[in-house]
Amino acid sequence: MASQTFGSRLRHAWNAFLNRDPPGRSGEGYSYRPDRVRLNRSNDRTIMTAINTRIAMDAAAITINHVRLDENGRYDETVDSGLNSCLNLSGNKDQTGRALRYDMFLSMLDEGCIALVPIDVDYDGKTGKTQIESMRVGRVLEWYPDDVRLEVYNDRTGRKEEITLPKTQVALVENPFYAVMNEPNGTVQRLIRKLNLMDVIDEQVGSGKLDLIIQLPYVVKGETRRKQAEERRAQIEQQLAGSKYGIAYTDGTEHITQLNRSLENNLLKTVEYLTNMAYSQLGITPEIMNGTASDAVMTNYENRTIEPIVAAAVDEIRRKFLTEDDRANRESVMYFRDPFKLTPVSAVAEMADKFTRNEIMTSNEFRQAIGMKPSKDPKADELRNANISQSSEEIAAQNKTITAGRDAVERSIANQNG
Image 1: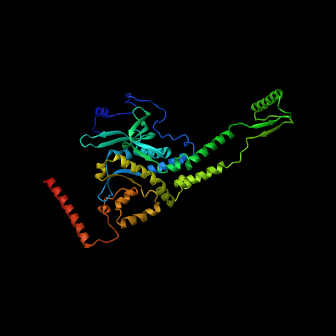
Image 2: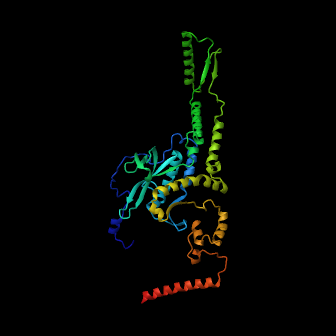
């Protein structure tokens, strides 16, 4: 940096506030993010918002990769493709790969069925292959025999627009818990209706109305008596409205009955019953929601709830976005869950010993799994049991390898000097 001249630094310097050329703005401007997930109005004020968000966050934490398999159908390597980039690095100009997965799972739980739409696709005329460069989550509006009508956010105009695409070009992911969460008579929809009804009752109780019945000391039948009753009611309203503490007086012969007492009904018990039923049918417990669940509960939750949701998305992506030639070349889409995420620190040492001793993982692979730098020692990359002494043949082969490597280095140095 010291060798650079002042003029060269000026030519290469840039500041966000000083070099402010007016950018060319296109589309409409909003005070909020227009492509954010908007839940249904029946769900956005209920407990289902928290449940859907929790499930979507846990499902988005699972990695989905475009991979290549070996001859036995096992994971061999990750394919550097546009599909893999959209799912992990950048879904589009507004969302990261994880944000796209979260959008997909949250919208799927809320809508019941969503479409994962390739937006920017690059077609190679020489090879005939297509490369997906960006993707968006769309809402299904209408179903046709071979097409679907979708509502998708257009990042060029800044608005959600309706388009019709063939079913073969979009991934239609359906919620595996559709019968429980999205059916009109499902448990969750019944719970939502009961919760909305409780909100209506609470608003009525807290609306400030007194709901009084005034019993006057005369019979209200004729027109004159009705006018007197209306005047008396207006006088009490004026007394209550004009009083600092809401106090009014009545005649000794008048009786007042208040009606806005809490009514005895089974609505709260019904809500509690439906909430517990929804939890059990979705495989969720209150401990999962507040983060105090045990390892066994979390394992059951991930196997019964998260895995079916992620598998539904992965199967549809593999079916729609991989061609016959891709599958013939042993390409696939797989999801991977970090097995060490829920592992307590007390069990890490024992797991490290068992995984390396049984030659399942090398030392460097386990160091990477727990967030440590790989060791420079060549033995750390060997898949062997370090507790067993090596035989004389293994030692001789290892020494031969070391000697060959040393000779190669010496020859390279001699060639450079010569």
